[in-house]
Image 1 (cartoon, rainbow, N blue to C red):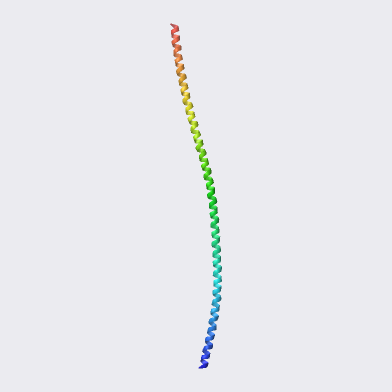
Image 2: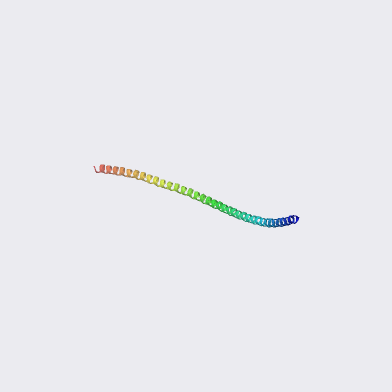
Length: 131
């Protein structure tokens, strides 16, 4: 019986050593997996940082484009104001021509009336002198 117990204990010892060996290999596999996962997470983190940098660059470019649009908008407003000024001046010039034409018409009408009166008086004077 002792022999049998001794054989069982030797078998048990052998199995425990095998289990220890398997546990050791599992630990080393787990350490390898842990190292691999750590490397993958670092790679993913680097990629996210790269993407974040790209978004920052894109954001800066949009800010530059926005500033350029603001400059263009200011220039258009300036040009628009200049056109408004020119339009007002052209309207003023048009009104001056109308007023000038109006005054010329008044002067012509006045002179026409004077000439007609003078002709009438000359006619009357000629008529009286013939009589």
